[in-house]
Length: 77
Image 1 (tube, rainbow, N blue to C red):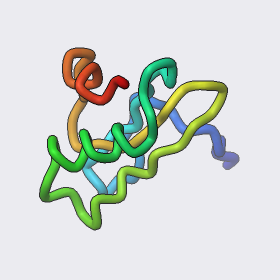
Image 2: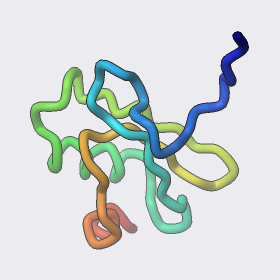
Image 3: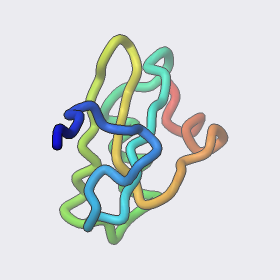
């Protein structure tokens, strides 16, 4: 049986992590601001590692719950 390496963005990032992969447009957000926001929202997240990545001007990250648009606006420059 073959499995796809491409991750379903709605599925948990890791079956044991309890997190889901999410996207946010890069347009007005800097990485350090996104990291600070995620640390504020999820202070007990293991190692404060949200696996933040930038691909094609879109941030992606793992978080325990969906980060809503209004929360992401706090990270904007």
